Length: 495
Image 1 (cartoon, rainbow, N blue to C red):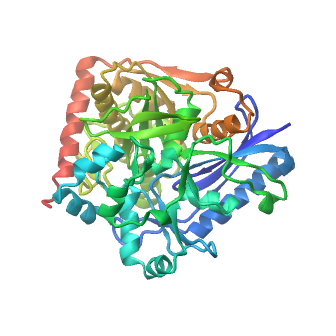
Image 2: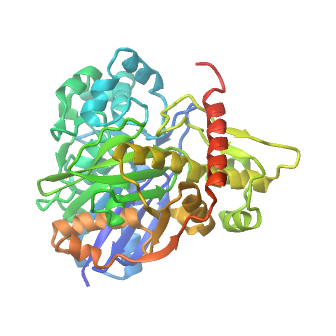
Image 3: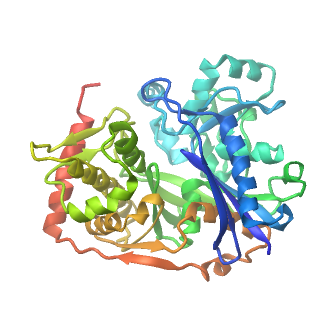
């Protein structure tokens, strides 16, 4: 019984999953890691903790499945994107905490780059906007502010990369990333498929500290883990978490769309071999590279969705347990005019406002915790609809179906509200770990575990479908009020 192991390294924790040839979960294990907030707007992780907990989940998953490592045909990796790690390539020791994708410390640097007229060149070459979300300004910040990083750069022992490259290095000893992760750095030219010398010069980042860029599914593999598990299992596939979810959702055809509901929400549309530059606040990114073909995508990134539920529970303390959410939605069908904009770290697509802040509007003496909680849940759908609308405008496609995944999708009343507010059919697949599954598919294709995409699609099943049922007049009223609330969050203070 040969299996594929997938490592899903996310913002709040790491999951390892074993899949069989039908794409079914055989066993999995999960470990959370600590979040660090040294200053307002800063977010960090400990790279050593991430690696050790990744190692633990791998071993625990194998033990749960009661198999030997020799029964694993290949390993795939998917990861929180844009998060940056710097390490000593001679010792393997990290030099600082990882700077997480949510971190806003480089907002001023992005403003300076925009005021210098660089925004268009970055957008043209990378498909991205100048925002602290992306890796390039994080790397520049480390090069300018970390004495350890400066020292290792001087003695030519510095390595920097996204989390996938950090894990590949620890698994195989090789400094490698894939096309999808490279495309999230502000340093990678998605037209040429190479690190861009002009952009590197603007940010003053030396190319030699960056990883080699390889296909997302690599028949040559990235190396093997023989020294760790006493069996040479190849690491053969990797993709950023959202691209991996697109792949796991079987969105292989141009025009197909998925939305992942996690710490944030991330909606991607497969645009095939066509690069569509957005005029409506979306990103153009690389979905994956298979063999010699690059597949592109339009993407809208929403920073705070599931993290808002965590804040209600752990920060504000008005939610005792996430198990309450379905009952709250069922028993409180409206928010009674309350709207919640969870702009805790600014707003992502399509607004791209790093200075926006969380806002609750419409409160009255009759407002209750249930109204606030429902408003927080509805904000997940409103933010997704903002992205969905922009995607329709950019692509010119009247999208009629949305595939969804992520933990929040177990809350069916929320999926119904998404169908209502976006006026679209929503499909939830049987396999919920689509991010991990996408990485497994990429690795499995590389080692011949699955023959081709048709072989994969044979096993794709839908668990539940949700159809829009809200009157258009009511939908427009909701969206108009949401826009007013969002405008308040963006104008809370002059900056």
